[in-house]
Length: 69
Image (cartoon, rainbow, N blue to C red; front, side, top):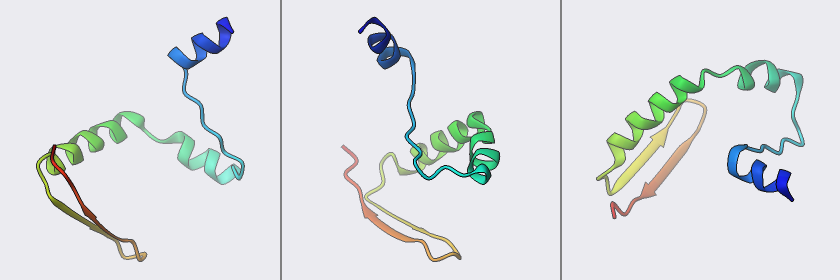
């Protein structure tokens, strides 16, 4: 239990049952400081938004209603 408590407090866990070499070579080499920076910029953009639509050329079309509170 001491290890579990320490892990829950200080560690992150990812369950990747379909992980491939390609995933490890690309996704796991991400610059997480850049991801954090982008996340903060997006948070600033949507902080008071009521509606967000995300699209991309590959077919993503996500339409979300938000509650600013």
